[in-house]
Every structure is written in C-alpha cells, then in structure tokens.
Amino acid sequence: MGLLYLKSDTSLLAEAIAEASGRRAWLAPPVPPEDEAVEPVGALRGLALALQARGRKLSFQLSGLYDAIAVSWSPNKKLTLAMIARAFLHLREGGTLWFAAMNNRGAKSYAKRLRLLGPTEETAKRHARLVGVVRTSDEETLAEAWRWIEEARTRFFPELGVWSRPGIFAWDRKDPGSALLVETLGKAPAGEGMELGCGNGWTSVHLRPRFVHLVEADRDALSLASRNLHLHGIPHEAHWLDVEQEPLPKVDWVISNPPYHEAGASRVDLGARFIEAAVQALKRGGEAWIVTGRRLPYEHTLKGLGVRWEIVRERGAYKVFRIRV
Image 1 (cartoon, helix red, strand yellow):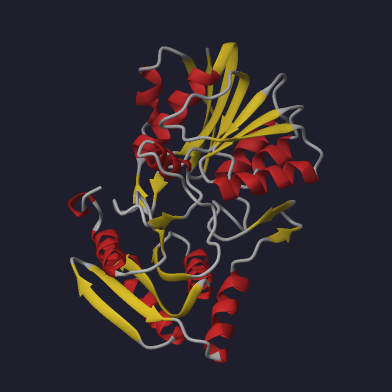
Image 2: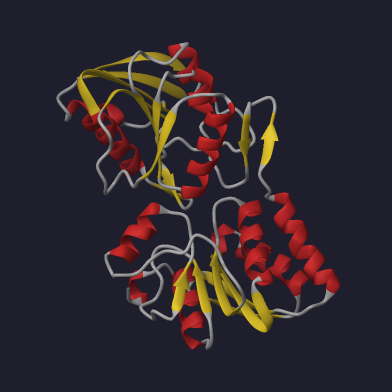
C-alpha cells in the first residue's frame, strides 16, 4: 500500500520502518508497507485477510528480539502503552521503537510518556507526531515498561462475572446498551444463536444461551469471550471473522450491540453492515435483537432489507430493535 493512502501517523511510521535495517516488526493498521522483511503483528481479522490477499501471514505476537518495531496509537491509552512496552522489551539493546499518533489523539501526551523510556527523536508534521526511542538495559526504564504492561493485564471483575482487559469494549464496566438488551430479553431465545461482535462475551454470559456462536474480528477479545463462556459452562463455538468481508453461520437468533466507531473515528456504516449481516445469518423464522444508540439512523437500513422490525425498548441514549425474517 502506498504511503499516500495511509493516514499521516501511519505514513510517518512506514517511512521510519522502511529506513531501518535488520529484523523489523509492524504493530500498526491497516496494512504494513510492501517490504516483506517487515513482520506484521496484530489480532484483527481484517488485517489478516488483507495480508492473505498478498500471500502473507499475520503474526499474533512478537517473538524473539528485533532491531526496529513500529507501533501505532489505539483508542485505549492503557492498551497503547502496554503495546509500546512489550515492543520495547522485544528490542535488542540499541534497537529502536517507533511510535506515531495524530495530534488530536494525544500524540504529545504519548511522547511525554515515551521519554520515560529514554532520550527520544521526534518529528512533528502532517498533524501527527513520530517518536523514536532506543532500547537500553537501564533498570528504571525496564521497570517503567513492566508497569505499563501490568496496568493493561487481563483481570477478573466479580461484579461483571467476566475476565477482561483494556482495549476491549466496556472492558471494566457494564455497558448501558448491552445491559438494556439483556434486560429486554431476560434470557436467551430458544434454538442456536449468535452474538455478533461479542467483545468479552458479557452479554452471552448474562443471557445464558443453550448454544451460541461467538463472532468477533479481534482475536484477543474472542479468546477472552470464549474463556468467559467456558467459566460459566455455556456451550459455544468461537469464530474469528470480519463481518464486512466474510459469511456468518446460519442461526435461529442473533444478538448484537454493533460498533459505530473504528480506530476512534465514526463508522455509522459499520453498524449498518452488522445489522445487514445479522439479518443474512438468520434462518427462516429467525429473530435478531439489536441495541444501538438512540440517535443512529438504522431505521433506514432496516427499511431497505425487506424485513419486519420494531423498536421494542428505549431508555436513555439507547434503543432495542427486534427484527424478524
């Protein structure tokens, strides 16, 4: 992918990693630079599919030591700092970690934190900031990196009944939209179902279906969701799928709290695609129960699908659709 098609922060990272030598890794969406010597690392299905189309594979985690690693911003600060820290610890001494973010995504704040790891080289242009820091064996620096990793560790929340971690939707709280969906349904519908965009699986845990297909584009979140359903003895099958590109299993019912943001940007069309995919996954006579933001215009999407639908519940900023085919 040419640099002209990348966001400013990502293009700065691409330029930096292209100039580096030795073993290199790339922890930045959407797609790594053309250089096949740069190892792409991540958990998103869309990135894996993009690489697959180019005859390449996505690594799920860093392994061994690298000479240079590029890391980009994510919407959750604790997760971003943990990614930076893990990358830093996977560098050879003298290797360089490169990080970039848009100015309106906290670039200056991240640069300040990166200075705790050592002297930095910084470039600010195109409304973004690129920061490079060299790996050392300084004990205080390494302790700081381990603190960032600890702050983003997976932990159990008794009040939620699930294991979770930063970077997952509503990772440490009960999302009011999902809670409204659970309250509206009371229990899972009969038959074989699906939670589309399952996150950490909180909704399925509290609806206790007889069997559910978990669908999620984030491999790490899917693993946690499966862990949580195993914990509660709920039979399930986990599917690492991209709703925008891949078909879903056929089921009797679907529940979903579709995303309408991606990488911090509004993606109302993504929520619409989730609703379309939910309808397409239903067997004849099946139902989908979808909770969305009250102001989001998904009625227009449903009108174009030729299905029966109604808003069965509204509270606060949320509404629940019941869709039948």
